[in-house]
Length: 231
Image 1: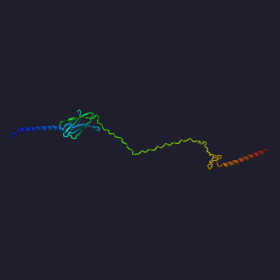
Image 2: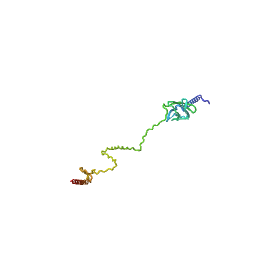
Image 3: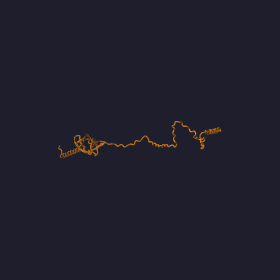
Image 4: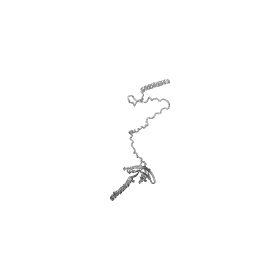
């Protein structure tokens, strides 16, 4: 039983269309599997430690090898990496220089090159962060007491004495108390007309008067005796 010509043409047409569709899907699948646009890079600094950070957002589970180079010098390399839809970041420790361009090359683990992307470092060098510690005021546990100021005491100067200083006698004789010095009268009053200050003034005056009388009598008797002898 032979196949009609119309049926043969229809089958042939379906086969060609299927092959074309399969080829298109294959090409699209390969293109979608891994693309350089899904890779990004940036330079970062963490307290003086520089790095080139590459983020892989290819979620086709394709294994890739990533290389970081500066000019012809390779500065970082890692193999068999995969990405996710959210992105997986790989940090390459690089002591990068300011305003320098680094090249990131992505190659499939099978050896097929995916592509390259460039990153330029900042204009300032990567430095160690020096934290600034604000000064803290430490309260004193001991309360401050105000010490009262003691006024300066004035020392009275010694005024010159109007009383003459008695010069001690150098003769070696004992000083004799002046018994004729007037003494204050009992009762607190002083008789300015009294010349004698001692309590024996009356006795002395009596004895003196008796001596005067005796002396006068002796003189009178001596004169009479002399006159009688002349006659």
